[in-house]
Image (cartoon, rainbow, N blue to C red; front, side, top):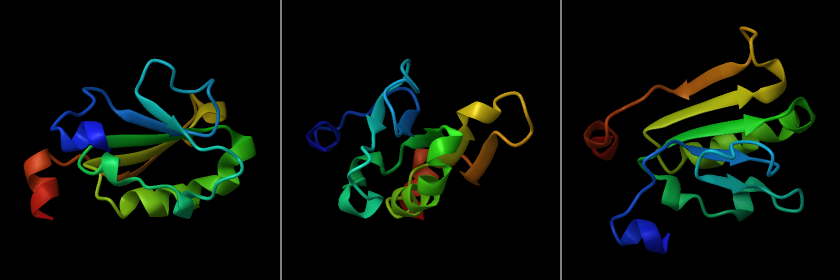
Length: 106
């Protein structure tokens, strides 16, 4: 959050995942098994494009993360089921992309 308050932001989409093997090429946060999404402060994701990437074994955790991240108003929010890559069921766009100006006005 300190970095965001200094006016800096990642130039790539931010990945939210449940294990370190996903999203290695992107700025990311990993949600450990012992925390619920409600316990995590997601304000630093406000106005940023966010993708929640997960494996099927963690699918039951995705909705709670979506709900918490959506509260901070990212400019884009999607989920990606890594195990389903290449199928029509891998992606779900929760919030279509909005420019930062539109997101701040909302």
